[in-house]
Amino acid sequence: MDLACRRSIPTLWDGFCRASGLAGKWPGCAWVAGYNLTFLPEAETYDVGAINGAFMMGARWLFAAEVAADGAVFDERFFMYVDDLDLCIRVNEAGFRVVYDGRVAITHLKGVSVAKEFAVMSRAIFDANREVYLKHFVPHGAWWAGLVKLKYRVAFGIWKAVALLRVKQTGHRKVRPV
Image (cartoon, rainbow, N blue to C red; front, side):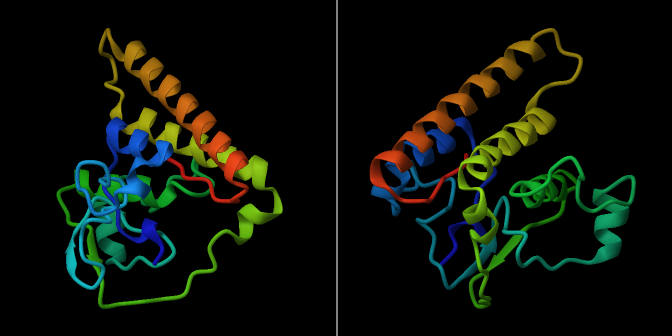
């Protein structure tokens, strides 16, 4: 199962647990597995924070009218990896539900794009995630917005370094973005 098919809108703690490997060691523990919601049953249906863009269904009118003020469903600033997360955040913010349906399965050839330029693309995953957080979770106009930006830049920088180091040590070509 592709873990990205159902996930939360991750907190800093969720990102740390995923990048450090804690979520992988205890996938059934809600306290550390909040990013990919691995503590929830795979075959059931429930609301989640985000789903994978490889297989999304929704009413076009809903996306265009309620979620995307300019009519664009996906934000073109996000090339890959987080365009689906950005859309799901906007769907949630608009008051609609994002639902994972465990009764449905598809085959997604994941990682084909990453395999060609692994080092470049794996770094891009973290950078894109950071940009989504800067877009949605930095208070605009607040005097302390600069501190929030700094917090996310530092956190994502550390997570990227830790995750890439873990990949190098294990020899696996899997990068776990936050």
